[in-house]
Length: 223
Ligand code: AP5
Ligand code: MG
Image (cartoon, rainbow, N blue to C red):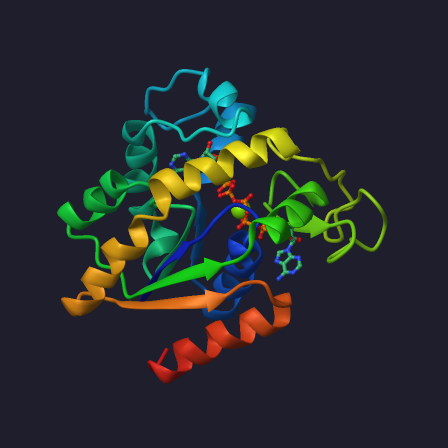
């Protein structure tokens, strides 16, 4: 059982590493951003009430209400594929969200914080393309698909995310510094209390270098 949180700004590579790590350890890969994108596309929520205006909020680069996000995560974590563990990519993003899982006694083993400069963030996000159904992520320069605009595995079309433009990214960065960055202190305290392990990772490097560091950390702690 391994339960991990990936913390970090937009474009820091959380989703890219989450796919690699979940495959390696056979644990569930849970991205709140992906859950919301699918919700907006398929309009199905397993009984959770939601208001479609959240799509406008996302496109503007603002955070979605804690209440909806917490309900989606609590429901998702109870699914069978989480029995071996999970990675939370993009959750929590507020102190309130972090407290919600703590209060429900959902234990976390590792928090990995991805640190990256704002310039790198913008460069990575502007060139990103995704395969909507799988969440596979490409970059026109740093991680291109075999054929431009086509997913390697399915042959389906890739898309640019509607929130991947300079204006929305700037807003996402602002939201990150205002609401999410305070979680570093929160998890430093959890580390001091012996509740979990917390690591800060230099995410300005290549995908393979970051992956290697993450694997080494897990190995060192017997996973
Ligand atoms: P979400 O989808 O989670 O977006 P994000 O946090 O802004 O993060 P990104 O997905 O943009 O970046 P990433 O770190 O996953 O980077 P990636 O691996 O793709 O959330 C979207 C929206 O949903 C939010 O703005 C908010 O509205 C809402 N939301 C989601 N969760 C929420 C929550 N908990 N509470 C409230 N609202 C919430 O990499 C980026 C690009 O760089 C890719 O093209 C990739 O190929 C490339 N790349 C990755 N690593 C490297 C590398 N090392 N070197 C070079 N290129 C790289
Ligand atoms: Mg992502």
